[in-house]
Image (cartoon, rainbow, N blue to C red; front, side, top):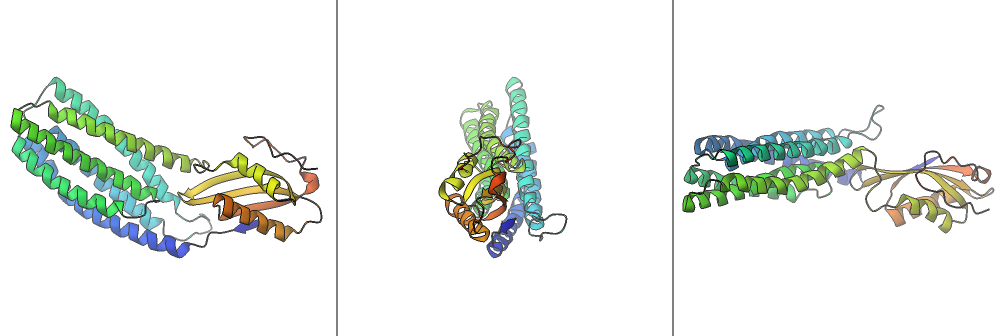
Length: 314
């Protein structure tokens, strides 16, 4: 059995430090303004502001979780966790996605209540607080958006802040409409619109992080094709089976497989050839490969396979 490892640890360490620093500043800005927005929402009676303040409250917790995950993920591997703590970031992203969905449900329920029983809103107070909130959210979103694009943890935190940003825009529009026309239903209606926009991104984040936690194959990687292509391209290999491909984090994919080879073939050369094919054709830099003798090819177990095996070249 042989292993091929990705040696990009220095880049990963630097990216982790940058993500942690960006999250720390985002926590300070978001948490600091959240207090002012809660007071402004209560004072003005605006659901849009309270919804946005609710976002910022959960965002502060979500950003703190993301920061903690980024910090923990930098710990080295040990005997109990041979892959280290990288998956903590994916778990944090999954929790953040579920939290966003819960916030959307709360906003929708509260908006229905407000539509059935309209409440007076102080448009001027609402406008000032919402404008300040928009400024803070733009700065925080920029801090996170220009971080590591492949980091689901950062993406989850950025989605929380994007929800706040949209909430601030909705609150500004609602305040302007209320000041101009006095039409109060605009406040909960715009809250619903923002909630639905957030829901789409939240569902995508939850689905993607959940797929990684369930050891799903990376998007765009065809395991059936991989299983067929190795024996087709490498004459020494007669059969490939027990293929498992998964992701530690987005962009860090792993594969394990069994390869049956002809008698007398150079095992080391075959390993190098399989590794090269996996890296060049599929971008798989971490491979666990078990070589088997040719006579085992026809008897390769298929109980855990989800596709037909590549045909035996006998």
